[in-house]
Length: 163
Image 1: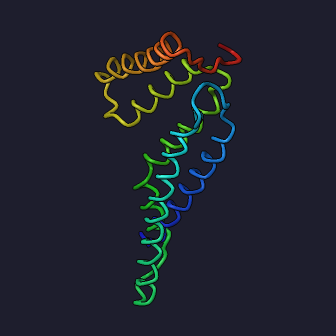
Image 2 (image 1 turned 45 degrees about the vertical axis):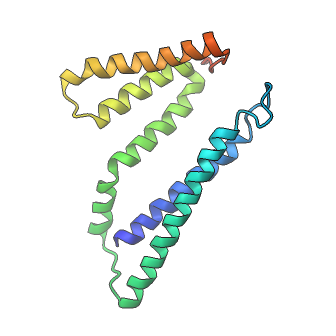
């Protein structure tokens, strides 16, 4: 059962990766660079896609071996346990999707700060003593990165409809 759930998650991640890969085609082709601004993200996504494909191939091969021996059984309890095992991964992906969606409304700085704060708090031990570190880190990354890129590299980050 673990192998089947793993294969399902791999197919899901491959689909998400392909969606991101298709979105990269919408990058503007500006500047002096011949390969364009989409080259590095495209390289990363293709590399990840290759690794996911290899992992999916190996998982399917293992499933076929298990199926021949008759060891594959599917139960609701095993599916539930597997979802609980990947709970943090699923929630982090949902937070990232919400971050991308709300960036249109909130702008890069506010959306990035909010995403970093919520995701770091969720992935931390969730103690009150961690909040100042998470807050400072989120502020430095969200506002520092945008300041550096805008002031020194001339890259303009998305402004939101609201902010």
